[in-house]
Length: 102
Image (cartoon, rainbow, N blue to C red; front, top):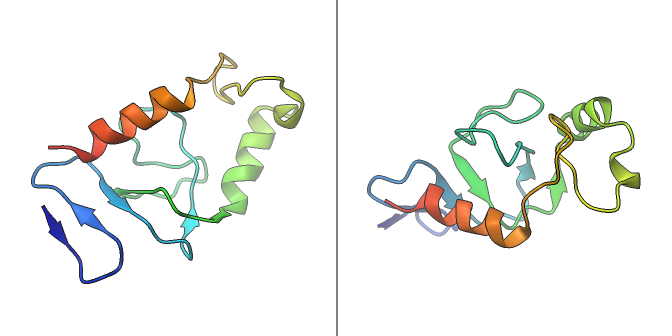
């Protein structure tokens, strides 16, 4: 495991993604079922997962709203791509751990 000099980024030897904690960075949205989690709804490609971001990409939000116009009216989170129920937060967090672990 290595760190990158105080930016909050940690990289494990053979992890598929890096875990960061940067509240100033803009978060991009990905579909929780996508394999791998590299391309966001807006098309931005990244190799990081930022668990501390406080701002979300407006283009990602616009694309989610285009795909699922009633996204904010759903009683439970639904996937904008296939309209199935999204996995629980626990399941998503388990996936995060798999993605950043060697």
